[in-house]
Picture (tube, one colour):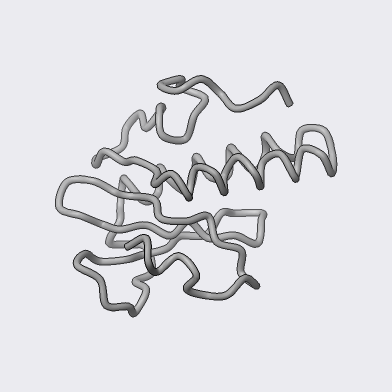
Length: 121
C-alpha cells in the first residue's frame, strides 16, 4: 500500500460519491480509523487493505443514496444516527443523517465497545 489517496481524489471514500444524493464528510476520528484499519488489513495480506477501503466506499455510497434504509441506532443525539455494514468485514459505518449531508462518525468493529463513538455525535 502506498499510503492514503490524496484528498479530493476519486479513490478516497469522501471524494468520489458519484451518484450519491447527499454530500458526506468524515469526522477526523473516523478518517483516522479508516486509515489505521486499512493499513492493518494491508499488512495482513497484500490487497486486503484496498478491499476494505473499497467496502467502506460502498458503505458510504449506500449511506448517502438511501440513509433512511440504514439501521437506526437508538441514541440521544441532535440528529439521527444510523449504521450500515462494511460488507465482507466485521465493521459498521456509523453516521449522522443530517438534513443535507451524511457525517461519518466511526468505522466501528462489531466487537469493540458498542458506543465508543457517541461523543462524536
